[in-house]
Length: 409
Image 1 (cartoon, rainbow, N blue to C red):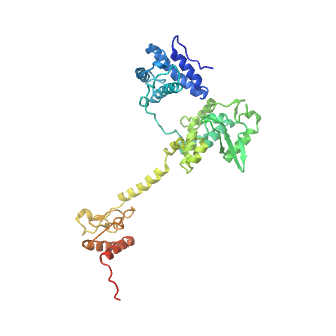
Image 2 (tube, rainbow, N blue to C red):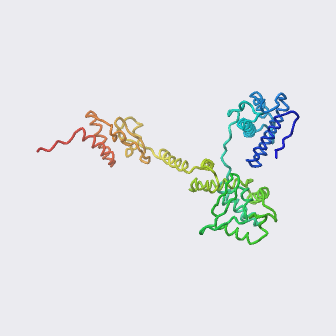
Image 3 (cartoon, one colour):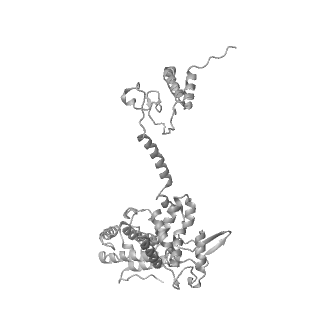
């Protein structure tokens, strides 16, 4: 059955769009087809009003695309103002895909080439997922557990502990809980990414689901969660969360924020990316990596480690002996400075250095007798400060300059 698009007399473009929508409806989800229909209908209407010379898709050229881009950018958005870059990108992206596909399919009403290029699409924003921080999540869960309605408590616990999508929650089958060995698992039905998966159940959830299953009326149409005899849906779940957030005194929480929160909590408490991807049903680690950007523990650990070393600089006033060159050198601490060939290293002792005597310890380092006085001073300096590693290196260098005499036979 062909998708319905508003028809206009003698316009092949309208018919081509209708045929295209009918084709993609055979492989894409209804929501994807609905979105494409809206974008292409908008383009069809624009062409009918602004470019009456264009009869079919084969007549679409670069000037028409540039005109459409300007029109999209100038039209008012749904909430006033101008449309967002993502809205413009979605419209142009759908049109580009439409033209690419009918060319690949060899349709008669297709342009010679696609007149939309990658540079035409505004750069896609990549905001981090919105999640609840630990204090806010604690307030939210405290309010959820104080909720009088059992369905609300169970639905929120499932979302907050498993990271499933709200569509998956509503589609849970009545026999979704299985026991494998000593662990209870929950079968998440086929969803957005066309795959199903099993995830482990927390013992508290096992008890809550067992108690829920004792009442036959709690199941409807083979689903695990029923709402007053009917199937649970997204709108009902959203209203549940609205009640919880109001009781907790926090801002509105979208169901998907709980999924983001589960992933963020897991990755920052040591759970591997592979395990999180399996829990959330991601097809690739690239989808999961976005959560690693929120609060990267490696970045945090290295930052604080460096901060401690920098703070050590502020917290100490190194000095050198008064006999050192100049008044500034006299401020360096005698016990910390390290004698070099032509000066001193003023690194505080709290700061480890991976490059101490790196040159002198290199196999390509070479020295001659003219540096013997400096090497001796460096050797004595290392011995005085009990820096055995440095002392050994300089002793070996001096031994090379003054090899011990061979014993007399």
